Image (cartoon, rainbow, N blue to C red; front, side):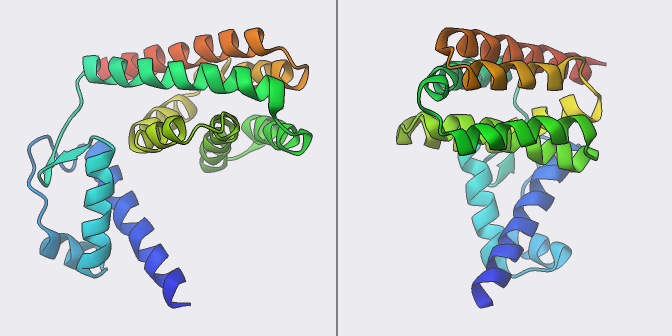
Length: 205
């Protein structure tokens, strides 16, 4: 029970600080003070400290100050993500277990019928399942350290209903299920590039 409470406090601190950075409440250059955040969010300083450390690893905070990534920063991050996830999609088409392919299909179905928060979670799971299949701990860790940025883009494309988002997931799933590595890789590349351009356009509006 204690561990569950600790985990809940960590998640609350992380989600709150991350979302406040994304919605502009904490602007670039804002100094994050652990004591104030702990009182404001209603948790102890330990989960605050751990949330800040995680967000530093994910590139949103440096020396306890908020960083606002530029368009170039986002493009560089997505170049790495595309390289990893294209490789992972190709690997998944060769080695993903049928039970995990079934989970991909469930994610696609939730994408069609779920509420926005359910679709965001399904979107994350869809990509996580594929990345995990690459069985490369360095690649998996690299994607993990992009999670805040990935969440921001995932939220943007779902909330603003990017055209063909779920259809692209379905085609990637089909390519993996039909054991077509090259097709799965190309479809993933096109999918992530479309996510990037759509979200960057929203930021400029």
